[in-house]
Length: 596
Image 1 (tube, rainbow, N blue to C red):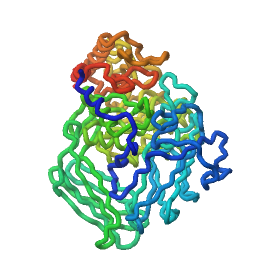
Image 2 (image 1 turned 180 degrees about the vertical axis):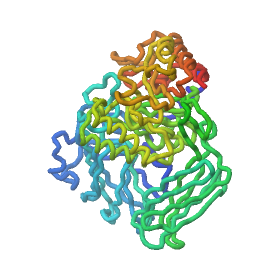
Image 3 (image 1 turned 90 degrees about the horizontal axis):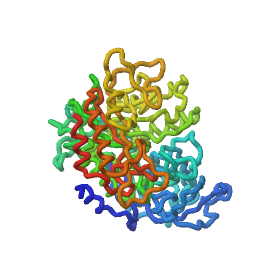
């Protein structure tokens, strides 16, 4: 029995009394909060009549119940209807804790796909567009003394390919590389109590010499506020300081002597408490953490904390059979990370998904490198550019503080730029690179993962599903030799008019070898990128051939195997869709040990 199989049996697949009860954003945690997951009233609005009929004001009694935060398409929602329903409504009534009297109250949504309108007691609190990123509203002035009613309208056009949708298919039934849709609320909803002034966010930028800068933004700022930071390592105080706020901003620099660095083998994290004070009165207190970690690319290699590292990643799409994009439990997120590490991978490429912050928290805690990726659209126009850009900015902002993230990948395989030879679409690819660098200069950025690169990329990423190691080696054995053109696959590796910029070469998709594990229920249209093998022995032999070929190509300094788990009809996972291992962990680890 593989060692990691034991982990699988530990996490529950059934919802608890409050599903996903853990704090949803561990990097910005307050003490006074209320989880709003659980049973909500629910209604489909297929004729889009809810606004005109004033459903937000209570004009209609909703006929269904749904278990938030699971999308109505999922089994765990209690509905399990995967057909098209573009407009949906939620309603919940609650009372606030008495201890919150005199506090301001924030209503948070981890993610709602794709557009959301929110009312409190029939009054509009606000609107948001973007299905993968969080938003919040200060609802203090909308609250009543007794019970309060929250109403949400979500709009998710299932066939619109100009909106970022990732792997959610625009046809009724899943097919090929596209899967069941996720509509409406799909991450935790919660309330928080804060002071009259409160911290909006804090950007944490550590340096290898022990310096760390905290850049805070303040809501409802007033004169005389001070911003405080208290840093601890393993509960021992290592640094603290304060600074007077400059209006709605505050920047504080501290130094930790001889910092313990963060890496996959030693994921050292520093706890930090932020306080916003008005003289001696604490208006807001937030718990966070950070890690000292540096990533660079130079001389054809990737360096972590100044030392070369071979990226050994697995493609992880973050789907579950009972809950699609929403993890069924926090333990399920931990399990996927533990399995990944047990098989000898040091990282995961979170593919076409802005992953749950709880996953990134456990990647930080357990030590797993992460490539952060945007859920892409498929067609290009000016409206798409605006939608994509807004949401990507919010995604990078949300996850900036995670030490586990070493790489940003805004675009994959020209999705959203289907005619990448068009100068306008090339401008978009290059703009995404420079935009990301302007938001976060501390990480590597890939302009267009897989092919059709410009000269603005920190890694030369390639996708190649060669069936055998011999074919793969023959294609790439001359990489880097003078006068040798860069090999291409489904599309040209480098767009016309650009030349290879000598960045490190990252085989960011390969493998895709499928086989049906004994006892698995497999749909009739099951497939894998490199075909389906009859048994484990044959699949493992082909995997070994690929890894051995890669080990003979020194110019490749990182890999990403497709993929961690089966997903619906796609059965090229190292695990089945329900997380049963297809291979012994030690056998996969032995393959990864070939790469140095």
